[in-house]
Image (cartoon, rainbow, N blue to C red; front, side, top):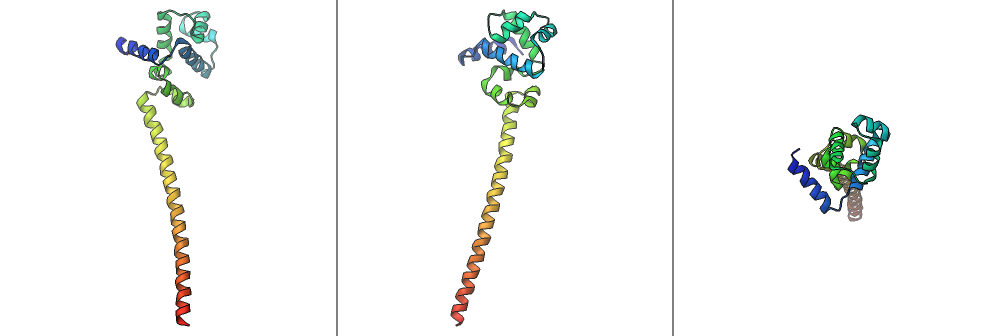
Length: 154
């Protein structure tokens, strides 16, 4: 990732009223998904447990520590997902999707595929209902025609 893109992401976060607390809570949620304690995470990252606590609580943390967290977590989750509300809301509901490191385009495509499948299923159900109704109507019409023929023959 280029530094310019990285800076742009944080400008976008600022514009969307994002703060360190939101990012910290996302880091915490991911840590918990892996079943790690703060101490275990700190050991893996080579930081103190206090640094992990501060990051997760969104309290003062150095830019270097923030970069270290982003670098560590990027191996598990796409930075796009961490920094974008819509992407986070979609993927955080599905641990498997979150851990596949999706990017916005893949998230959108996956959700569109699910919606398409659901719409196709709904259309098939509606077609089946229409065909049933048409068959019933056909039966009623035939009965009516048979009744009319019977009356004419008399």
